[in-house]
Length: 327
Image (cartoon, rainbow, N blue to C red; front, side, top):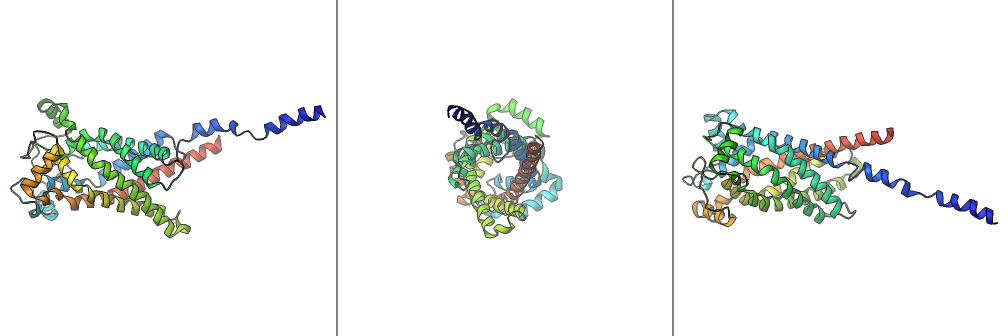
């Protein structure tokens, strides 16, 4: 009887050994089956494609937001600005500053999406439908990514101005450093964060909710319509978030372009001071300058960004699955 017990006991304990597999799971997957560096690459690709594709619309938005006080805010429309650029500068005028955005978009979106995915995994506590976790994760992501993109965004906007005094990216960087100091590159950082925190919260929460709703409409075709779902949800999220945060975007543009090409210079970087100056000069309509191109930018841009990002994630998931099968 004693011999039977000692022989059976080790066999019984040896059958269930989940601990044998835990180290392998921990090493090979962090969230959604992807590693941190894969989120970064997927985000970098998505951000670069998004901004390069929609750059001309961004130029129109910048031009509308920095129009001088001699023009009442409602008097200059999108069609007039586009016609002026094409007539005076040609199509190339729509792409001034694209090199600066190319340098900033990839790294900033790599940070953006990787931080978002890690925070979403942490805050959701296993609930993939937790909209609050998506919103909070979006805020953390934007604070981190804005620190990367703000300097190049400032350079980009100064190059987009009509009759910009800068020859290119390096010329702009050197002159700003010499004439205004390094703090000029971050003059709008606080405004950018204040703007992008609610923008991103609305964007991510709307995106996840819209994606979930669209998938529920036709669950049997969810896999076949995956790209359409991501693009549609991204477009809805981008348009709504852009409309809500346009006034703060006007403030950001004013701060980044201050003192250049006749733009007002502000004694402080206070959001309140800039808002009061805009309202005093142009009325409350001045706070909504460029809202049409801003929405026209963010709706398709978000669709492009999210569909590209999800496609890149799917690619990495497939590659990881093949690697696991081989191993």
